[in-house]
Figure: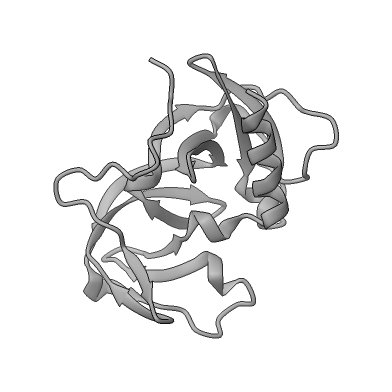
Amino acid sequence: MPLMGVGSPRYGKGVTGIEQKQGGEHTKVDGQVVVFSLAEEKYGIEISSVKEIVKWSKTTELPQMSDVLSGVIKLRDQVIPVISLRKQFGWREPENLADTKIIIVEIDNAFIGINVDDVDAVVHVPSSAVEFPTGLTDKVDMIYGIAKLQDYLLILLDIRALFSSEVMEEIAEQSADQ
């Protein structure tokens, strides 16, 4: 069955968005997130955006592609661009890419693979455990919360804000060519 964008998130039982902005204000909402590792830190993205998690697959590089793009993979007869979060954050790639995972997410009806070191779990993040960063980093838009969980801090990422408009345009052009 081919992956096909449906335009609206698929929410399961008890799954809602973690954060919403209303009039510039943050409102906290309980929700589930997929937890993944990158270097020594734990990150999370809303489960509603995640469509699939796959083992690393060799990518095909495209001419003149963005530095953060690892290339493209074929998954169920669909070509999916893969973005390296390590490259996005300005870090070196891991020594053994074969041990990494690709999280397939849907953003604006386009499927994108996000290469991460490992996928750890799906956890429920109560709104009472989330703090919103202010003034912590220049790229605060990509971090929409930090969850204080029992054993660790979980950096919650906004996948829409994670990538530059140039990268998203490049992905949209590639998707349109399919």
